[in-house]
Image (cartoon, rainbow, N blue to C red):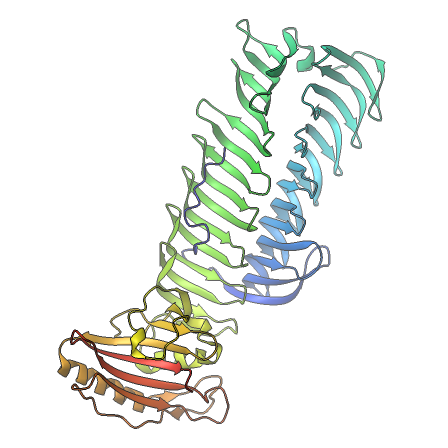
Length: 549
């Protein structure tokens, strides 16, 4: 049944606005008294909104979803290290309402929960492809339940108590064509009796048959088509079908495939329709509205390999609309999807607590509104002045520009500006830009000896224009006052300006930052005017360190 297209499942997502503050919070406590680390939306100093709880010990790996005052509330999913998961609607830290649970032994339950345990109506499908559909109380089968046996030829409709057949009911065995009606106690048939309820097993037009191609149990029309409640096992295709039929077509029920997929929901002539559940072992779990056999509307989609979750809208099987997405790196993305890719406004909260908000296209930030660092400092995506941009870049240098580093870039056209550049360095798009640059600012780093920020201000064949830009930047660098949380007292950059020489391939002026601390011992700012073989002049800044330092 699964039709959802994962065009850019690991891409960034976001929301139209940031509703509230986002932070990383340590040593939070859940409803079971377990400690977790939180990243996500925060109000009044507590997890409130959407976020991720990451556990360092125990068999719980993480929870991704809604919170109210530190407790799981709203839509959410909990992952366990043994492959199990819980997903659905939470209240006060536990599942309450509709939900689903996969256990470590491969049993899938979809149905009602109360205070974290099965209570109400639901469907239990075992790893061996048998199932129980009926009532549950205090985490056990209670009330009338329909049970299909593992081999697929025995089905029962009996009252249960405390997980065992304890009461009146019916059982049909297709292999022997035998119907049992009577009373069971502790899972054993004890005597014949007449149950006081109507069952599909005792319908007037009931038939039961088993041959080399199928098992059929239920009522049929005059033309031999299944109707009402019935069960069909296709032995050739290894698929079991149970539920409500009309003229031989399953309209509402279960499809259990021996290749470990399960479907629960309604169907029409095209396929799945309405609210349905779809699951494949060690692969995916999906639930939500279907139309024309595609996920369409509000959905939950879980990648069971990556332990990632998507909550949001889909149109004809493609992520489109508002959404929250939690990836395998414990990063939360919130915002707009378009045709399977993150496009629109939104924000991303990383496991460190850094928040990047802005406008995105095809999963890339095209305009950053703001960056909130893990320490809570807000950096505008478009600094208003040269000095403001310079200060933000210098502030982030000691951490390899992490706070302003965006996605990996494949643009290495400017690497020859330093002849000793390491071919193995990574190039990232900067999330902020200097005013007046002609190309996207870049960050090159090997996280060790080479770490620098690159801003190109001019590329032209007019040498005189290049000289003017070079001199203009020299004045701005000389005038800039540098101060941040590390450099408490404003200081000036120090350097002897080399006059621009158009007859040389490169003019380079180095500025140093002399401070009392050791954070900037190897730090420099290089002002460069460079001429290439096509007589194009490029004026740029490089900020950081290189390996000869």
